[in-house]
Structures are given as structure tokens and as C-alpha cells.
Image (cartoon, rainbow, N blue to C red; front, side):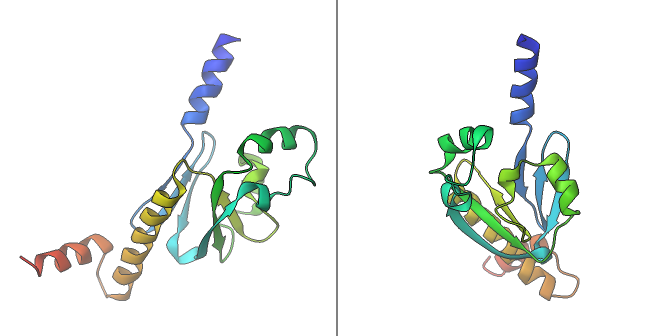
Amino acid sequence: MLLLTLFLGAIRRSAYVQPFDNHLKLATPFLQMDISYRRILQITSAELGRLFSLEKLKGRKLDMLRPIARRTALVIELKGWPLPRWVLGMFLSPFFFPDDTPRIALLVPDWMAFSDELESYRTLWGEGSLRPGGSPQTNLLASLNKYR
């Protein structure tokens, strides 16, 4: 029983979401997925209890959501799923999917800081992708060098 508890604790800590230069990485113990910024349409925030109506949930799902229902999640609206929806459903909790549209709900410790960081990366990526041959890092460094 102790080994199972340690294993489940390690798995929980190995799941994360992290923005990179040209994609958002969503990693779980059994799935690693890169979501291109090109695929992201919009990012909003919403309270989990409003995304998943507590009145409609029963049993174990209600027990899982009730303690975190007041927390804010980032909802990422996508042009389309990075993998087929049924594949994502095999590896991700149903609470990642607010409805049947291509949207993913992410519950992160500090949603405001994460949202700012993600938007910064997306902005740099957008500016870099408009310039031929430029990467976001190169363009950022070039803009900083102008002020030397």
C-alpha cells in the first residue's frame, strides 16, 4: 500500500504544462503533447465549478470536483485537437474537456502568472514568425541590442 501511495504521488508531480518558444507542452506520466501556438485561438479563464456544473455531476466526479470547484482554470480554445479526441480522453481526465468543442481546461497553481508567461511566449512567437528567418529568441536579442 505504501508503494502504491508513493507511486501515485510521484505520478501526480510528474504532470505539468509549460510554455516554450513555439509550443505549449502538456505532459502527464503517460502522454506528452506539444500544442503549437498556431493552433491556439484564444485563452480565457473560468472557475472550474462554472465549466463543469456541479448539479450535473454525480458520484466520484462530483467528489473530485467539489474541493477545487472555486479554483480558476485557463481555458485554451484550439483550432482543432492536436491528437484525436478519443486518444486524449484515454490519457487525460474528463476535467480537461469542458465540452465537445476543441477546448482544454488547465488548472495551474498560479493561473495569472502562467497566463502572462504563456501570452509573452505567444507574442514573441507571433512577432518572430512574421519575420523571415527569425526566431523569437533571435528577434528578442536583436531588439535588446538596439538599446546598447
